[in-house]
Image (cartoon, rainbow, N blue to C red):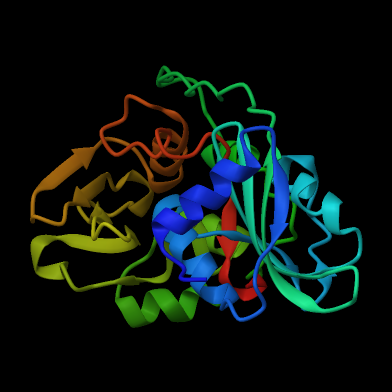
Length: 268
């Protein structure tokens, strides 16, 4: 079988919108299948690796893709796409042979999260707690013992407290497998008064304008791939919350994902 995007489209059409699964020819390279799907649906989430299922997998994270294989799944990656779960990888067939598989399952589309309204100055919002809720994060803190004094000494500046909580909580990875959370801010744009704390595969850089003595009052600035600076009067955690769930935000990710997660790179 020659594996092309057209081939995959035809296979998915065979499975139909209600779902199903197909064992594919053994000589097909499973990674090629994953790569082609990723080129359309983005970075996948790992459900099963080396026969071990991620214990956090539930109905909201693609568990329906595993049902056809019982305990025979070897490696399954998953994508959420509208009202479908799409999965690819390998599983053992009835004879015990490990073969590439493509699987589709129905997905309950959750009610969209509403953007948190702009708050009056006298109302305090814990944006990190909002971000934890938006992403459904249930893991323990990933970098609780980080020595910020050493990091800040190396950078020559204190850092915003909400950013430090993000790194301590989520660790190294990306929101929706798209927005990379930098573990130590970059000073590449220091001459422009900008410090980079995140970036995307579209080459947008998320920065602070380091004006004033209080880092918790530094505004976010997006340096777009074409060099334009777009300012936002908010902190990093609020900015991430809003681009995840507000479809009207100029840098929204809500058009691409209707559930949100943080992909920790250490979890693979």
